[in-house]
Image 1 (spheres, rainbow, N blue to C red):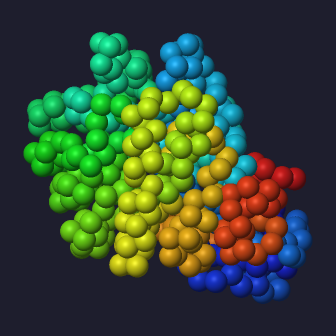
Image 2: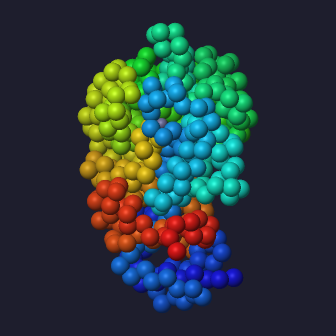
Image 3: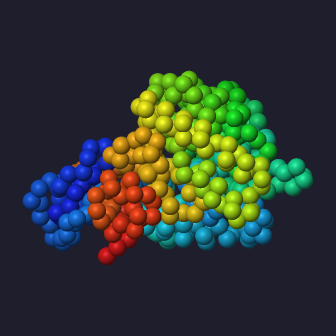
Length: 406
Ligand SMILES: [Zn+2]
């Protein structure tokens, strides 16, 4: 086999420790050594660069390429499948080698990546997001029409369900369709015109059966949860990660800590909605809600960070353009994380949330050779913002195969 040596650079190992000078050697798909004075068959000079683990984005929508209700009505049904090819590629070019798709991508999209038909990051998919009638996933409009962000099709069942019996059946349907993780919505949201992000959705009995059915198949549940009550309902019933967490309160923070669950803040998401509102394709109710949540969201995430809650990096990319993902690190740092901790949220901590920490998330012997080479010190890049960080990415490897750079 060929041993590839990245030498002379800093290594950020993904554990939250600061970067330190070291060499990294990988052979095939596996990292075999990290240390000083190592040798290999092929050498890459990493002087002035940082080697870091392939990063994670725990909340993306690769089938979305920006949300615009009017334009959406005129878009051919199958166009998002083709656009996802570009979105997946863009994501990898950011140095993101693992994603969790929070709704939209079906088993065909994930299989195309897994079989190497299209280049892309490792994927955990949720297929369809489960929502109550009148919830964040219900596309009913006051005019009587429905505008669905995820139109159901044979590979992507409708996610609407009410009551424990329907919730159980719907969870089984989505698992049958190939979900690696069950996505539910325990509160209203910003993009849906008919609900309120301050209201909790689904009751305990419904969430309990979703978690029970997922666990029976060895899977876990992530919840879009913005209302304080919806966050608490999710955590009380065993949900593994709270997405967005806009109105997270002390009770929710206490439960996150007690249950050792993760918060995936997606700080960038309301900002993407506001940026897109300039295009005029969003309903006024949606724009108003995006303005309403930004300050509360920042305050809640700041409090959670100070309390020591486990954070995993996620962006909701797809709601806005793909490729700005790395800007989330800057926002997490502004909300009180150290740069080391912010990067940990997108490496070692995220691997823990996705249940893949044994093989991914850190630069250590025995781990998969998912690696990124970035020009400069990665702590500076994380603070500098998404576009600077992305421009500094010089190489990306997945399973030891170089996807970006040469
Ligand atoms: Zn989302």
